[in-house]
Image (tube, rainbow, N blue to C red; front, side):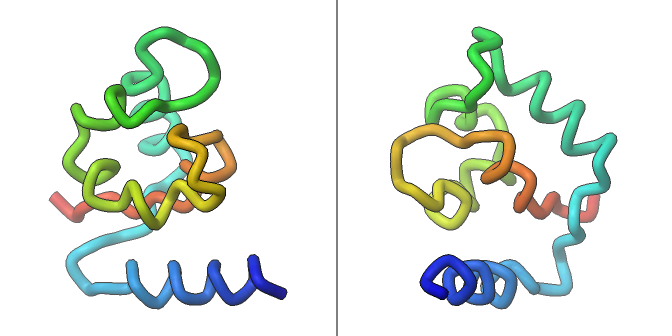
Length: 81
């Protein structure tokens, strides 16, 4: 239940009209680009190269372990540019 509420808050927070949900190919390419050391997670340092990921870091890192898993990263919303 706690995770469901957190996901709802995340969805509402990121629901601004200036962002779009990343399609899977865009998100996949961004993941590959950010995971510089290819360890299967994105660190805060790796994320710093993306304005979208950096801006959403605290919302995406659901378990607050300092890295984004692929599951957490799948919640990313990319700017419509």
